Length: 109
Length: 115
Image (cartoon, rainbow over all chains, first blue to last red; front, side):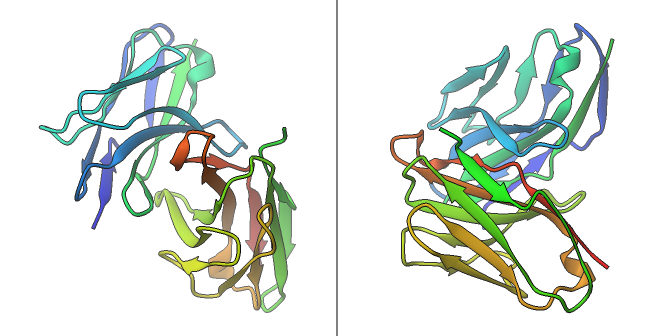
């Protein structure tokens, strides 16, 4: 069945550092890929998505590229801010939406 | 446009008690979902409804029932709560034109504790 494996956390970075959160997937067919973000005490919000191979999703300075050859969708940001502290979930949509276990990111001023 | 709303935000139950979690969306979405979130396990699908009048089991349906009351509302019922059902519960919806059938929008969650 479909599955998503993402980088285990927690991840702690200093403000303005570069961020990469790894995500790989296993799926049949050609799923859409997503990154969701969950801020403390809130529900999940869609951060970005890509619907086909080589698509790049971007939002709020975050980017992720749908790599079919490596079955990956790594989340990147060039310079993180304290306000980026949250839990990040990678997900794929096959028959249903399948989530990774989440990566907690903390940014220190 | 409130998106997806859930009530209550917090609830404490005793083992064996029953309760219903309410969810409503105002985006005219066909599909609605109930998830639970537990530490280290991501989100797991409990039940979903692809359209008004239909419901289907997800990954962890045992101990739960759902009702798709109309296109806007999708409720989750615990008939006899157990401590293993202590979790954070999220409702979500998806549909055209808000990002298409695969893009889900989430409510703020209900934090449930069963003693």
